Length: 305
Image 1 (cartoon, helix red, strand yellow):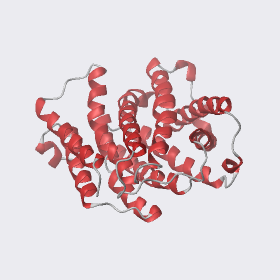
Image 2 (tube, helix red, strand yellow; image 1 turned 60 degrees about the vertical axis):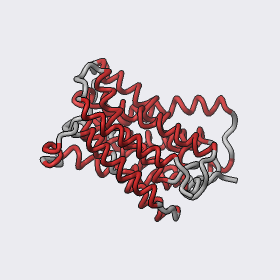
Image 3 (tube, one colour; image 1 turned 180 degrees about the vertical axis):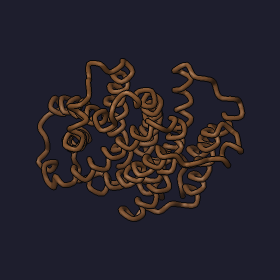
């Protein structure tokens, strides 16, 4: 029997708690891809970078899957599922890297925080999941905290916001990401996570190689700076293969809105990554926004009885 997402009315089961912990790790890993990606984006074409990223990730998880044993027969049915999921997943990453060529990492992570509300909408449409008043309040508080962090507690900076080309491109990818989360649960037929992971990443790599063939062969890979290779390995292993598994793990244990609510932590994690990479420390007033995201997560962790 396949696992199904935990309904918003269920108690805080062990499975649900594990889903929350998985998404906490997801938010930290995703933030690293924004900070590192902003440093690598000027040096390589988005489609070439993403194709190589998916290829490395797919090969890695395929080796692990092979060592784990034979592939269940059910995983080979309805291969169109993997094409659909891979298209959404690959599209998100391509638009992200494209946006990072012109938009700063923190600004991009702000756009990413729009996905929880969209995910709640698609979760209702695809899975019949409803957003409770407590969850809606958590989404609102988390979004407010994220924006506070992004604009460093400066109201004038918020009022002067202008949506740039990079942010607009990435918004399209965020829509794809919001659809992907509930669709992953909807199309699940009980396959092991490694099998689905390998199938989607492998299919995504094929689609990206076809679409970005000219960019792939036109890139002088040997001449790329070290930051590109560092970012490529990090995003392929930590921010693609691992986060894929974390989202799938959580999507089968939590409602879609709760899964995507952890994106509200990403801007705060981006600031942590930026500090680790030698950038300036945020002012004390900025930390208030991070505190609001913690309040939002605390609300999500409580039982909606």
